[in-house]
Length: 310
Ligand code: BDR
Ligand code: CA
Image (cartoon, rainbow, N blue to C red; front, side, top):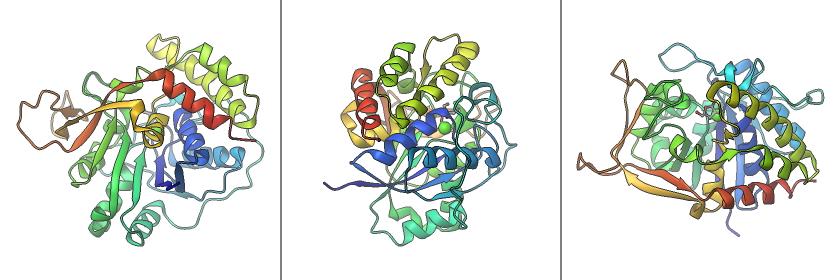
């Protein structure tokens, strides 16, 4: 079976950790590397979190630290959801896995330049690393098979009424990525808010009884608690792994081609992904935007991959 080659650029983050779980074990995915960016917490913390997750799962995947700061705007984090460490909840064994020496942006550039144009870039955090890579070495652009991101919304945001966290946290980087001219699949809040991780889902995964399910449960117990405190929901939207689920089986998410533009100019709507759902602008669509999800199928996929771990 031909496996989808990906680089997963993330800011773990509870849901990023589950994205690593799916990408690291699915037989449909070849995870070439995990690159880390500041987002849910500072880079010092997200890089440690990525190493802890990869080590805990026993994955043989290199981890690269990237940008600790957005391209232009002030840094913002999401400690209200992900806690002081960015991954509150699980207790990890002492860390022995180390970061690669190469910077994440250099790794992205080198790997894409050496490729046959068959690598998909998945981003589940602010898009700083990919945006910087595109600006540093524009020759990578035609080498990017597709950008699959968790970010944005064509309805309401989760940081402001207009903007979602990953986009507003580095809207300039998102702008660079959305205007690069490569195929984009945007998994935004419109989809992820339909994949709520209710306590019944956590109990279901708990029954698997292996190291991956234990990590999932420890992560989700914290994540769901903070989602309830912040948004008042019983189950937290499990945003990031839906990117990987879409790559494993695109039928899990319904998408619609739209012209999508990142607002980097306005005050009230800064960081909004303006998606022309109805095609008012008569512009060529530049993104396949997620509009629906088969949540049952998604949870079945999560369970299936979790069961593949020892
Ligand atoms: C996104 O923001 C982060 O807090 C999550 O990890 C996810 O990538 C959701 O808005
Ligand atoms: Ca994330």
